[in-house]
Length: 344
Ligand code: PMV
Image 1 (cartoon, protein in one colour):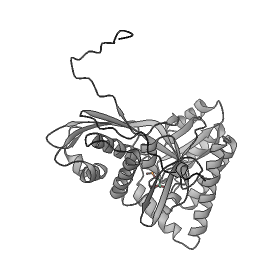
Image 2 (cartoon, protein in one colour):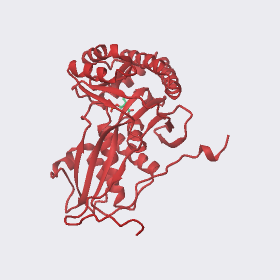
Image 3 (cartoon, protein in one colour):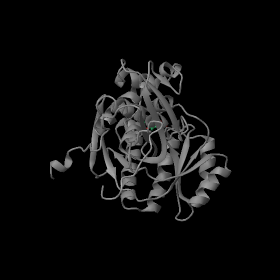
Image 4 (cartoon, protein in one colour):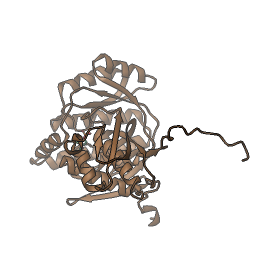
């Protein structure tokens, strides 16, 4: 094996930039292996084209959307500032997001990635692997539990396998005796359909409850079953085998039911969308939150309509190819854009 090819890549970091700065980070959707990934098993997830945007300009004190209270009360923001925001150079932050909070679609990871990207821009820039490390530590610190999966998607973009797959290695994390390697997986270009139940969930509480379930005598065996489904799922996505991916989504769902994170509303949404899809499952921590479904070819709109008619918030999403990025700075008022004549 070529040693150089195994080196983690971290190309395309966050450049240094003067404020005001705006960053945009994608949400995520987990296809296989949520919960088991916390225990070091494989996961497959995609960055989705629903984004959180954070803009920052210099100010006398830290604020979020013109208020100072969230700086203390929002654990993700408080952690971000305490760990990575230079305290002597406060920022006024404004945020807008298409990701519902506590929905299993990665709103907190996208928020942390966008905040830490604007903070990094003003402090000399930051490589992508280093930004992923900061985001993981911040989200983990705020939540108290969790894996680097969500923040990897927000920072890395595309489809990513954690502790599995054979794609290019992006970076690695290790923490508390566990390690996670993050690899890119090619995108088959499918449209995925998501349904948010409107029932917010508490990721930390759910992860702890599943941890207790997995500590029982059959826990190891359950984890191995999660790992087998995720490993096969990664291969099926690489092979663009839609029917196989659908069957594995269903199998992964049954495991999530076994560890106790389903919810009657999620089962209703699955039943509603199934006729138009090859498979559907809970995505994220569960116990509320969202489902992900893979439509049969040409039946994407029908799947979206089925979820909406069942009373959930429906999204048709594609893979967001890029992780968090800085957007072009807004032009100062009065400045006009004059195009150079050709050949100038
Ligand atoms: O935050 P959620 O609901 O999207 O869940 C994330 C996935 C878990 O595996 C349950 C937790 C984690 O940190 O990986």
